[in-house]
Image: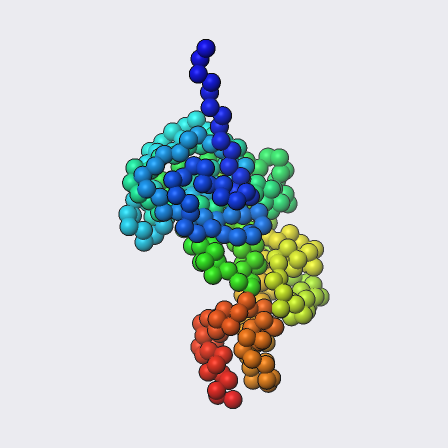
Length: 303
């Protein structure tokens, strides 16, 4: 009797420690609680994976500043095998459900991002039949500056987190979905162009909601629902109206309110941080110094 063929492993990044099934060491950094998306930073020795497939779309990216600027190896995507350059910002795309394996010829540092396939359908449904959205595989031999920037920003968010992280992650998730639809899908939708921004009454409702809930961890889908738009359209129209993204606007509002409370109340810096949507005093201080040029303590001392 012949040897029974080993079942192909299935990896679901919604489950804890999913990637531990195929890599020698656990990731050095993981995201926590991001809806529909999961990020990991890996530092691995020479290794090779068994054949497997993912329930989510997976992107892999080299890390600028790692010890080796290139970490060559081979990858198999849906039965097609290729040797890869794997430069410090090269991108691989592994669509959900296709068979996949890879080997690394040198120790390597790389990032992995898994996204729920439903995201592409939700973002692209205004332009193309969701059933026709097919993400194409891509070997890790060419860079993509836009995707690399998203990886870098998500790495920072996974490291520091805090209040406001969810809104920024949601915004990046939507931007990534649009980029994938435009550049890496079999049917590429022609995305509509908008020039007039949000209607004034809608913009007023959104701004009032934001300013009334700065202490909450505001979500992009909540704001888009107020405007009765998809998150993608909401971000575009909001930026056309105010010249900044919803995340940037909310950060400005939080800092403005924090500055007002520091100058006109007896609340402690810790209390003000919590009332204005920052996770703690150091979180408030970091953004205060970066954007306003002084720390909350320095502002108090100048009263």
